[in-house]
Image (tube, rainbow, N blue to C red; front, side, top):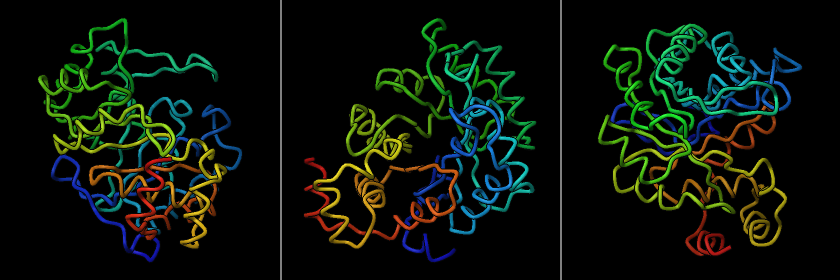
Length: 284
């Protein structure tokens, strides 16, 4: 463990997968618009390797990132994987072109997507496989049931959900154990607050996507900048520290294709907010 994450606490996903609470989201190692390969493939792989050097052991990706590119880069950079590294991926959103994200929750599609992810990642079993989004054209129970079937076949260790409501989480839990939920959540967007509370009550990991609002929070000014100045930290680090302090089940996964930004993000694990600072941000 290196200095950047020396003070970061751990969480056990599903009670078994021990991860640092600050992970890495591998969406932005792809090309512009999360489409195609990155301009600098070597840099993208360097970012992945440096994340592990800094103590990260949870990498979140999806078949839709690229599509396929993020998973391929992870395997190129990190396989054979070190012990303790948890790779979480997802299926259920397709990319007809660079500007579209289209749900597809059909069981046959999810089965095929899982097999493709296993091949790209060079794995026989995915530690955490998530339904990327409910498909309004497919009964939710059928999509979740398809993942449960693949779990019984040994291709998935644990199952997670993404972009769901509390009702959908409850429905899924009646079909199969759910160990994580990945919903949009950050200091300025708490629409998933009820889902977070439900995860806390059930000891389910909550993975907030868009944790820095694509950088908007780093430029927000006001209370965030004031607290950052008090702590000698960046506003982005404070926004991540607020998430870590918000709930013990919170696992932020800030993503970047930049080495300096990666190092800055990882250092947020060592930023400690006072109760007064946390409350001032919580009311913002």
